[in-house]
Image (tube, rainbow, N blue to C red; front, side, top):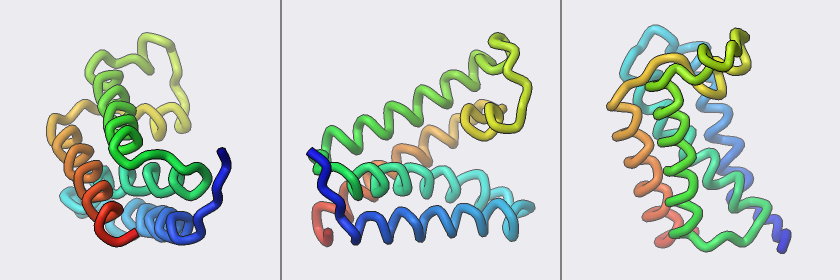
Length: 121
């Protein structure tokens, strides 16, 4: 059932804004863009989903984590190249380079957003 939650939407938009700042301002800061950006994207997706639907926290956190993990696995197998998707949008959505640290970042993001959600939101 659709159930708009303003607080989740505000957090999602704040994450989106921080993501744009990371990509534009901190693009040369490897740790911030490469690691914190991946943590942030999991928080963004979780809060965006929670802003429009009353998902249960555990299945949503696991689902977002699995989605992020699937994206990373597609990078490992170079799925975009195999499908001949050579454009900026597919590079943004699927990424271009596998990195094990991204999996760690996604895990931290999923655990963190679940933990904060259960305690504060």
